[in-house]
Image (cartoon, rainbow, N blue to C red; front, side):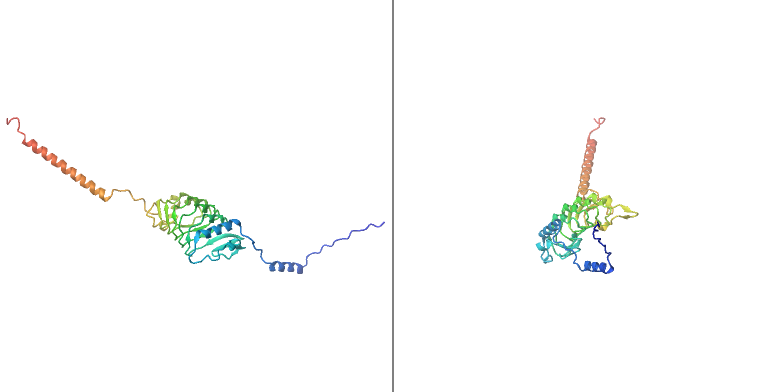
Length: 275
């Protein structure tokens, strides 16, 4: 009885021609497109647009349809938006005459590493929600009309290299925690309305040089401490000095007059021998 043999399957090694054909096909295939935005990025961009006024129409392509797919791999067609692997990682809207305010929803762009809204006309405060941007390396909100304090929560953005807030109307003190940002290499809060002592951790000397020089803090009348001059003593005002001088002179005059009167009276009294 003859045993039937199952057919043998001969494996075929890929030929150089086959490998070349596969590589060419891979190159010719379109790069995969992201059909929709990350919902966090979409919320970030749409809410930021709603919070801004745009008199020069610089953000004309910031539309609802564009928010649905702002990134195409590493590129974006939105003004000022740069993408990385399908996520928004850079927002640069400097010098566009934008008004309005910085939306707290900017914190939804969780991959954001660079936020530059400088040289506009933005008002309101700096939203503390920015502290949720844990990858943020550059924060530039300079030359605007921002008011209120510098949020101490910014110290939670451990990767910050640049903090530029100069030429606004910020008030209050400089949060001590900002001095603990070990990567911080550029810091400018000049020309605001800040007051109080400069945190020592922002002014630590490296040899004979401060960590940040006086130009980083200039233009804030209420700030003091190295590298700025020390606090001015709460001395007595000129009016008080004049008042004290006049008062002292008057008291001296009264005392002198009293002493003279007593002396004259004593002289006029008859002696006991004379009686």
